Length: 206
Length: 206
Image 1 (cartoon, rainbow over the protein chains, first blue to last red):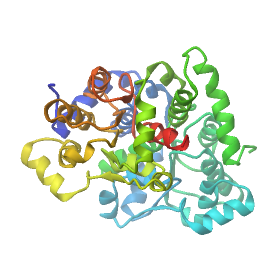
Image 2 (spheres, chains in turn orange, green):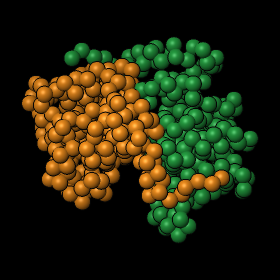
Image 3 (cartoon, rainbow over the protein chains, first blue to last red):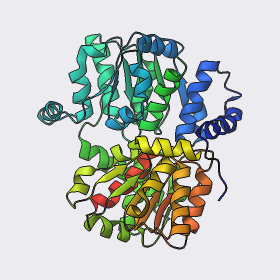
């Protein structure tokens, strides 16, 4: 068994392997870092043509980080995956209400998912913040509804829910929204490590 | 925006979409559940031909769960993704040492990754237990070394690390090991939600 055990070397080698898959996408340096970290987290170069980054998304996220804004996630796995040490250096926290008792009660009472109820509970806290969704299409639909109907406007939405029911539609709707800068992935693929990777890529550039 | 918000209905519909992709794989009912939950977690039907389940793996994992054995994970995201309520009903816990200070010191002193040092620290605790690796190939290489050199023998290894450096090799080695039943995915794809999904699929059948 002969293998690389030095973390920085593993990462460097990985980015080297990913690079040729990005060469025809005309990405700037910051976009390249977000793409690379997403592909690294998925172990899947087929993400390359599916990633969508709004032109203002990275700058908006980084301004929000620097201003000490919080990150709001749909599930605990996204919270776990985000580099909280780096974020807290600016004063921000990662918040997730999926396991909250009141949220569970609201979900039951209204016949919605817990992640929808969690986003609804955050409400105006989302204004100017970073939203990171890695699991639940319903959470993303809810954030887009809140933007449309209540004028709630996060600085950026990293919306990369996963699955065969609603995920692709919710992400298409995010990419069509005319108000909020976003990072997303077309289609059914995605997940918590993918959303966390996009957030971390932007944090690591600061 | 018209979308399904009832969690059981989302899951039922998702499994229905996945089913045709499994029809030619000749899976039994338990295997079908593990495959489906992995594909569901990845939003990626191309996992179907890449999943490998040792014939004894599901039975061995379920016996270990029922006996109150612990699950040992390489990273916190895998721990977060596992249904701990279901596991604790049998007396088991999910353990992860990636953030442990002594593990960090050992990793630094020996020039190995923290997840390798974590597995080495667990040592004989892994005998008869469930190991779930969703991120670090080096953790999987280390468990296989411990099995080979020290005769440490988990009941089952869910080994689905992700990435371009070492992941595919570590998973091939796991599938070739003659001692420990395993669940894995060929190639570079994988990740924490994938490993957690395989574990949860087996827990949910109990």
